[in-house]
Structures are given as C-alpha cells and as structure tokens.
Amino acid sequence: MGKPHPIELRERVVAFVNEGNSHREAARHFRVSPRFVNNMMILHRSSGC
Image 1 (cartoon, rainbow, N blue to C red):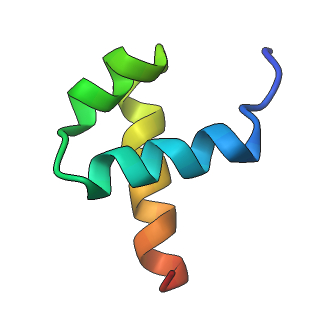
Image 2 (image 1 turned 180 degrees about the horizontal axis):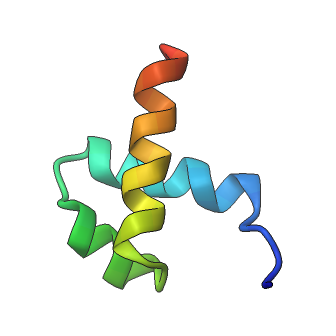
C-alpha cells in the first residue's frame, strides 16, 4: 500500500475543484486518481467546511 497523500495536496485539490474545474481535470492536474478527488470532495462537503 502507498503512502497517504499530504493534507496540503488534499486542500489544493478541493480548492481547484471549487474554482470551477472538474474532478477529472483535478485528477490530471495533480496526478491523482479521479476516485481520490471524488472522495476528497465528499469529505469536504460532509465536514461542512
């Protein structure tokens, strides 16, 4: 199993999507899986931030 992604990457991914970019664009831009982006957005919405 790989190392977990740093918190700052998670925050940058959420900010990138909140700027109007798609989940796929974020995944390509940050070289992560689309599922990771999706999970971060779900976590962000559920935390109420």
